[in-house]
Length: 302
Image (cartoon, rainbow, N blue to C red; front, top):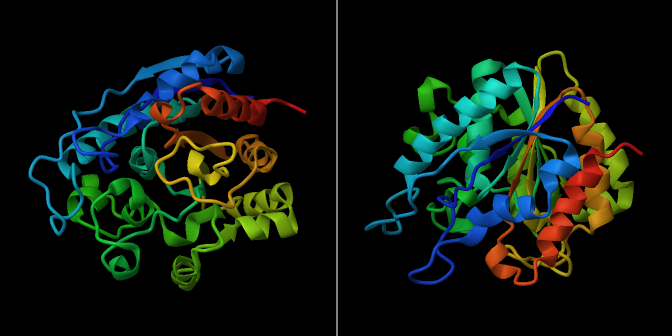
């Protein structure tokens, strides 16, 4: 296995406040996983912290586009600089978030280096944009829009950083673990030829087998490699209640581990980011302990 380098990206800029006068607690994710000794258990190297700007939506109102956009754009470039450095040296980069908007940092970094794919393991596609906002709600929270933004859909100050739109091509994206209820999103994604594997699909065909099939599809000569995005809300709330949208009928721990293990052990996989787990919603720390265990298990040889 290559050297694993752990970078903290404690940004919560892409989520709505959970209550008036508060901020999303997912910025504590990295600290909580470090309390579980994830770095030592992985035998990983330190990549430091990429400090985000302050969370401040100011006078933002619905209809103003993505809130915190200027801060997210600046942070995306800063995070991309750090990730790019490690990918160039051949390290496996593990980024501890953060909300899902941190995935833009990885997408931009890899766009600088060539053409890369994305395997996103997420309860929802995070594909809200102006073309489907009538169904998915108004534009605003980048944490529910990062895949749309990364594929070039949205405002220029987030989709065209450094003139590199799109950071990801539609045909280079694979989605895992979406809830079976997202049928309208799945239809749109199918039209764009973005494969989407639901929880039901995974249980019918087997998570390891479907991950292996996806791996083969990402092993295309046109691609220089791929990145994995993990949103903790892909897990069922019975085991992972500490997320902002704990939707039922999610993956169970063994199912997620089976997918991750196949993907991260590929030499074509250059990194993984972990998002959305909120320690504020996990007073006894049990959900964070489980998440750390699953990540460590994914890297462990059988």
